[in-house]
Image (cartoon, rainbow, N blue to C red; front, side, top):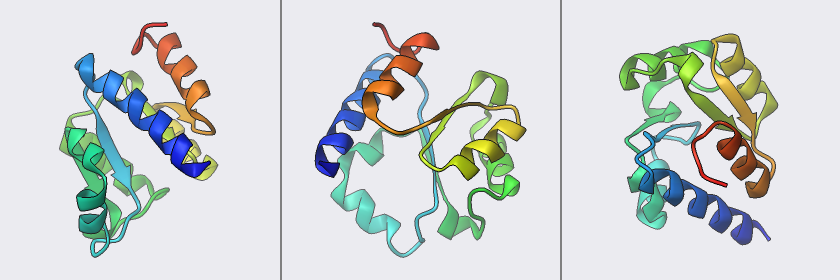
Length: 121
């Protein structure tokens, strides 16, 4: 079941990439384990930038990691959709002005992306 959910999400990520939507990741992976994830998951190369908490010594939902992402990637929070499965991370991003979507399942994410004009119906 988890494999299916990941596959659906990767399809969505690929569609966003094909449309030229800038893609950035903010992850709480450890600095030691993230290189293993890069080798295992080819789709991680599709991101225009990835901020790894273990490398930065900051962790979501600490507002400093969101500020670092804003600075490093040149983000405008009001023009950026932040997607996360943890409510506390969504709340922290929303406080900084990000549009947010709490990920529960890929179809709901797809609907949100269509509503935001990022994907076609």
